[in-house]
Length: 292
Image 1: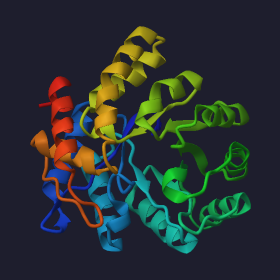
Image 2: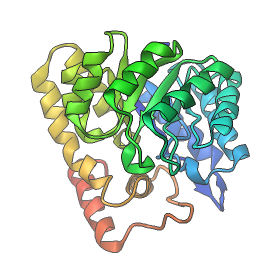
Image 3: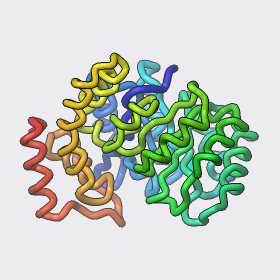
Image 4: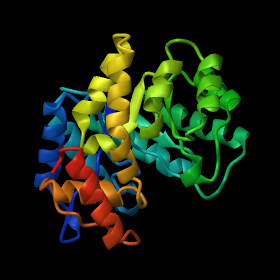
């Protein structure tokens, strides 16, 4: 499957401390009905950090089953423990994921050489299309453009990157160093349009959990060289982007889905509910955006 356009970093609904499978399947189905180009279970937005191994596997398995081959599934399989990442990657491949998303090792802050070695070690054990996830704000380490180019050129399974630095100069440098087949996906909702203008292929989005079709149409507009429509959608989405980052992701977007009647807003500690002030601001933006 072609991995391009708007992909949603899916939230994971909980109920009574367990995965709410019914709401999760409904959410996936709604995304597909709205025309989303791909699904990403077990990312940051899916609260992967607080899923048990069994839950992690269940979230991926349910997503693949519900998608039923209609859109690509890029399964989160990263870890700061290389051996654990191998295990998660192997499961995702066996479950039928179209590709995996591998975050850079977090907390242990490897060198650039260590990052390259990490991805090479995983690829040596599991051959599956791989998108690297670079989010230094979460991990404490940034894959430099030159390192990203080496990872891409030296590891055949690596097909692209979810680039979440928010640094458009870095986006440009990566694209300059890699060939036209490289799939750069914006990891920041705010930078989708400029990333596409530089040659990016799409986005792995938080906000598309609540407005999937708008993201699909924005990507389509750029692909059709319709800059006016792309700009219009960019600015229409801007308030929703701000709203969904009023607090740590996925607290606001999960709260928004609750207000929209799509699922419960249960979070796992150490994440706690949105403050009253932020909740009021979120509701107001949802109303103005006609999502309530």
